[in-house]
Each structure stands twice: as structure tokens, then as C-alpha cells.
Length: 66
Image (cartoon, rainbow, N blue to C red; front, side, top):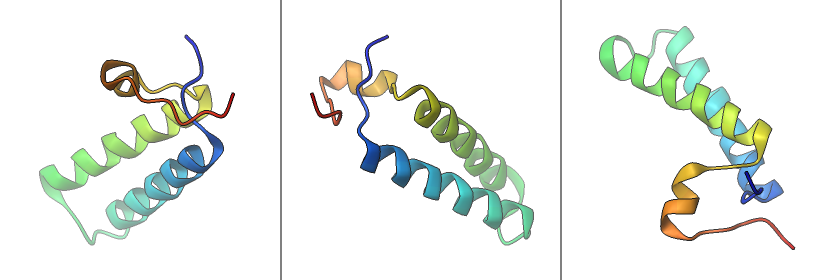
């Protein structure tokens, strides 16, 4: 896996993941939408840690500076 995510993209995803978690755990959003947001947050954290997004590969995107 080649890195294809830059630092700004990684920080943005981490902030979104934290926001999704806060919204879920404060019970602002519940039910199916809450689980979807929590799942997206987990995916965002995972992709930020490894600096690789599979969807970027499909669309030919790369935000990582070379």
C-alpha cells in the first residue's frame, strides 16, 4: 500500500471522526444513522493511521506530497 493521504486530509478525517463520536455518545443522533456515523468515524481513524484510502485509488486521487 502506497501512502495516498496528506497531513491535512488525515487531520480533517480525525476531526470528523471525533465529531461523529461526540454526536453519537451524547445521543444527539441515535439509531441507524448513529451507527453509520460511528462506523464512518472508525473507518476515518483507520485510514488516517495508515495514510491510505482505498477510494482514492479507485478515483486516482493522491493528496500526499511527494
